[in-house]
Image (cartoon, rainbow, N blue to C red; front, side, top):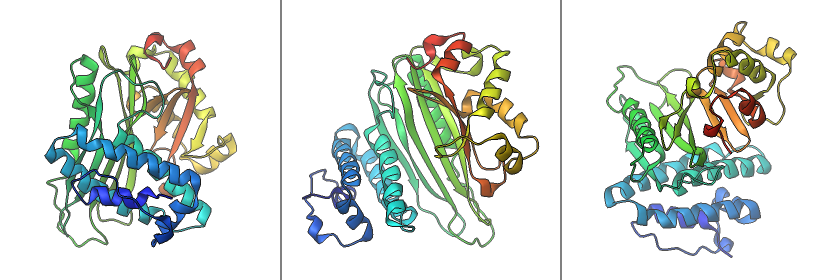
Length: 328
């Protein structure tokens, strides 16, 4: 019986990508025991281990070392995030964290057949201090961009990296380590559309950190996709109305009803929804349609969390003036 949580740890701590067997009878940590006791979680961990085993072939020495440092940090973050709650809650957390990380390491899309071009994982890291940010960025990019959309996608990724607070300093004592964590994962990839979700968490020394969602959408052939390329100005109102009717708490299974919106949201939340409906920088696409992402504070107070609306492909097809750019 094998458990690849220890395999992954072994891989990130050495430059070798040779598999390291682990006997689940010798599992020591709570995370190891959970992985070894749940077949679905073990399979997810196996998938991540296999993806990591291929990374060394895709990156040069410097790139691999940076990604390895980032993987070490991710393992610690994963265990911290999933280290409390009931066993079922911790298993669910580990499944979610592992699945998302596998998308990065394997550089594969969550949905869609793939764009046809090779994509690779990358990372940027910086150790923090009392006055400087700890930076952990991991994502995907095209290995050898030659088409307009591939170049555009990589430029958007580079712009995100350049916006990170590598050189920012702070001149007061904080309650915790200044931190900047960012993950760039493919939600959908096909020859006509590549859509990536950017999740950023930043702690600037205040009462708590904050999460921000954004997106990268390109046509591999022609370049960046914007709202105006897909929809007419008149479609924005209908898209906003559909979005309001299909709002979910992030990761929730049931849409919020009007009474919940009025009780929970800021009085002018409809204006924020209308603005987001007309701006593809907050949209990601998948095989079922699109999701419009709202970060904490956009629609409601921080304690309410983040939200997303889910727009079906049928609606997008009816309203789009360039349906060939939508998921097929």
